Amino acid sequence: MASSNLSDKPIGVLGAGNFGTVIANILAQNRPVLLYARNPEVVRQINEQRTNRGHHIEPGVKAGNDLSEVARSCDVIFPMVPSSHFRDLMRQLAEHLRPYHILIHGTKGFDITLPPGETIESVATLDRSQVKTMSEVIREETSVVRVGCLAGPNLARELAQRQPGATVVASPFKEVIQVGKLLLRNNRFQVYENTDLTGVEIAGVLKNIIAIASGALSGLGYGENAKGLLISRGAVEMVYLGRALGGDTKAFLGVAGIGDLVTTCNSPMSRNFTVGYRLAKGETLTEILSSMTEVAEGVNTVRIAKKCADHYKVRALVTDRLYKVLFEGMTVEEALDFLMRFPLSADIDFI
Image 1 (cartoon, rainbow, N blue to C red):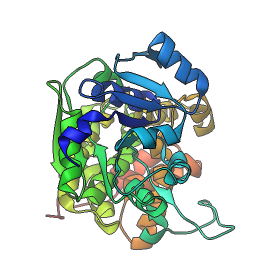
Image 2 (cartoon, rainbow, N blue to C red):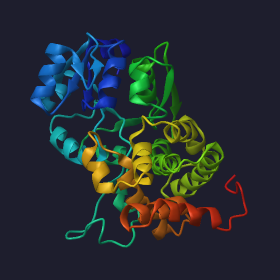
Image 3 (cartoon, rainbow, N blue to C red):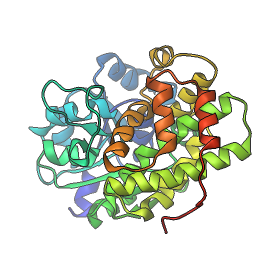
Image 4 (cartoon, one colour):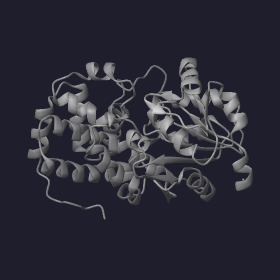
């Protein structure tokens, strides 16, 4: 695709949540944007009132709820919907997509495929054939070949305030990376590149587990020493589990790994951090999730990652304890006590 042809068409964004809205605004600084939202009322509010979820909408953004129009009008599309809706959306979109489309997603979650009659609760373990990244879902459900992802320390509120930030565009296709950089980069938003699409996707997903744990530490009133310990041990855990799932170590040490991990582990603006914080304050998971307006991907990720760690015999202590807190009734205090007492000796042994 020549860049001149690229400039003639709007860029599609699928999903008008906080992150989708902010990415649409960033893209609109360089190109016209067609923002897809399922809810006609959201479409009307964006187009008439020029606001959504408290965000001002850039003049170049137009909203709509017709997927066929997005595919017909846009060669480059950014899916920004929760992982639980991602496969269904790709199935709806598939008949309208062609091999010339480029899709760069921003979803930090896994998709699981189970035998008929099975549920995530009923299976003891999960292997990699049952756990898919969003780029793999795109390839399974559509004719699109050139896929990529966005990952990094991308808190929507800070990006909306035009505070300095950065992201990684990852893809095995150089063209996808270059298109992503061309469309997203501005004087407040740096874009890095990485060819390890799988590793970057997995890093972006697994860091949400550690973010929940960090929120729990803060909720208990613990300080920076404890948080530094958690983040460093969490990074090691991400590397081990990520490599078992097919990622390369380097992806976990860059902007999409350590960069995103540090950000979400230190920010009350992170949905996953908030889940952990509220758990430590005594709320139940049901109460927390029912009151949240957007999905905290880390909760489901804990469930999936725990079963993957069990299958691949990976020691993932933070994930294991969080699983017990979220789904088996263990208290946050009991989980922390176990982690502090566990006899670990090696600091870094994966390099």
